[in-house]
Amino acid sequence: MLKLTEKLREKLKKPFGKVYKTLPDIDGDIVTVGDIVTKTVIENNIIPKLSIFDLKTQRDIPVEINHTFKKIIKVKNPPGCISDEAIESIKYLSTINDKDIALLVDGEEDLLTLIVIKYFPIGTYVLYGQPNEGIVVLKIDEKLKQEIEEILKQFKKIE
Image (tube, rainbow, N blue to C red; front, side):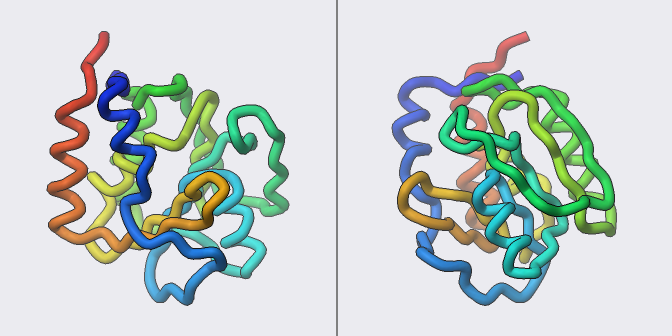
């Protein structure tokens, strides 16, 4: 398991890319991380390859996603951490040629954006919410993967 350090927490509060108020046009595979982003994308008739959420926004406000996913995988991921279970699930899901899959997180999903970027193929779009600002849209490329590797090295490994 990887645990977020206080120093890293501050760095990760800043968006990694452009923040959009409304959903931009995207052509390609999409992975959504977060309930509001997932709900927004689906309400715009876009089916992500993978949707990662915990059915809560801002830690404790319930969110309802009115969609029947083809497959739902449940993982535990404590707040401020990246669990081995979540890493293995995302790693596996990055290798299969399917879409409309949900990763339902018991805990917190925010940090899993980093794992998606690490394992999903170059060219995949990753969308996540920036609280009270909008949607961050990233297109995975080699530079972003290297940046994420450096960040992941700064996490504290715990058993």
